[in-house]
Image (cartoon, rainbow over all chains, first blue to last red; front, top):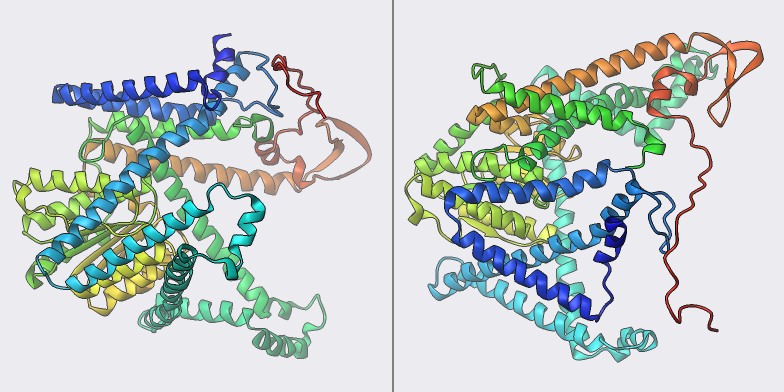
Amino acid sequence: MILANATNFWARESGSGGLFLMVFLTLAICAALIFGLLQMPSRLRRPVVATFTFVSGLFYVLLWIWPQAQDRKPTDLPANFTESVSFWLSDALPKIANVSNILTAFLLGLGVFSLMRVHLTRLAKKQRDWSFSIVLLVSMISITIFGYWDWAQRQGMTPLQLEEATKIENWTTARLGQSLLFDGLLQAMDAAMFSLIAFYILSAAYRAFRIRSIEATILLASAFLVMFSLLGLADLFWSNMINAAGGSDPASFINNFRLSEIAGFIQKTFQVPGIRAIQFGIGIGALAMGLRLWLSLEKGGVS
Amino acid sequence: MQYQDTGWIGIAFTLMLVFFVLFNIRRAGKNNDIYIRKIPGLNAIDEAVGRATEMGRPVLMVPGLGELNAISVQALRIFSYVARTAVKFSNPIRLCCSQAPVFAVAQEIIRDVYQQEGVPEKFDDETVQFLSDRQFAFAAAVSGKILREKTAATFFMGEFFAESLIFAETANAIGAIQVASSTENTQTPFFIAACDYVLIGEEFYAASAYLTREPVLVGSLIGQDWSKIAILITIIFGFMMESVQRGQMTGMEKQPDGSYTPIAEQRLKKANETFMHNVFNPDPPKPLEITRPQKPAEEGAGGGE
């Protein structure tokens, strides 16, 4: 029953006294926690952090293990204990996700602060490459100003006004600046960096495919076969040769030597099992790592 | 979790793997002399840092583009070892982060390393840096750093995507020794093509056990091996069962509700009638008839036009 009522615990009405009370209580609890942690003897910090880690992890473990309520409607109340817990967990999920979003936002501030400190110091001391620091700081500040200015102008607009505002003849200075900096510069530079990959693939492939060993030779041969199977003209030419050699009979053994068959054999027999084996290893490794972190079994810097 | 679709086998298997890991972690404390095969990429760390020291150039580390999760934490654990080696040689370190939470954790870990080695004053603002959370802005920033500072050794470990080749080729262009590992299967071939040493798949997770030989980590590694053996046995058992059962004749037909009815003529078993198929695909559920109590209607709600 308590858990059944608790479904509303996560869903206070916006602007209600209950919500403000919860916000106030949360702030007070957080302040008390921070104060308590600062005052706590060092030997006690590890168990406290370990307990917090365990409880936080337990939520997600429960969310995964606990049977999920099916076909739930907004007006439904839980029918039994299992559903009560399931409802409570699924109602709590967005709120818990919000906590991590808020923490990430604070940490982003920390990251931006670090970035600014590095570049302001470099600028103040006229260290090497200080001119790049000017570019970074000016870009960062200007895109923030224009982005926020543009966002502020669009607040309170009706959908019709928003549609009108997006037409180029109605662009304000803020919209123009934001578009120039974001779409005109940042997106274009992103695309330029991405396009560099094509050239890097070429140079990396050249080094990888150089025949230095038996393995490199096998790699080269398999890569060529798979690539040729994807080239329509090469596939057509090869297919004609196979047909001429008796491949027009579907039962003929020579049909196994069509490019698409060879490429399929390489991919299905060697590539897919290889990738799956690697994925098993990665998955089990992540599981073991997650367990060690959750149960605070790791010694050293991260737990 | 939705047991009606998947059955109990997935969760039972996962709990078995969890048991293997925890049991071996507990067991490992008693036996520290456990063989771990050589991993050339990890043996190369000291060589790479030593070379950077000789050349008087920094060591660069990137923990990928991923959020703060098991992968980035594992990358930071490896980097704490690399950083310790570099600090011993008084070598400058550049650890570049693209995610703010990873940056915050990395800063603490590397600062701890400097303090433990007795040189906290050498940790400065540029040791651990947050550069950008945009993929290609980050790629440009790291590439710029590699080129300007002429890093002698680079370590790329974690979740990498399209930018992996930009990093690896830029570092290759200046002749840096590169040790890399990506948990993304699509990026591993790029690293293999462009880097000197690559940790593939589980080698990435085995790295901390290999480098530190801590009983907990070594035990966890043995647990992982047990888990892989369990998976291997399941696969072998599965294909043998399938091979045998697909050749068997049956006189029963499986109905959509999961029941079996006799048929006039015997036939070969279908794919959905084998043991392994039934284990991983439980019988289809009967139609759901869920009746739940309803919330009381709010005053003034509904009814209006």
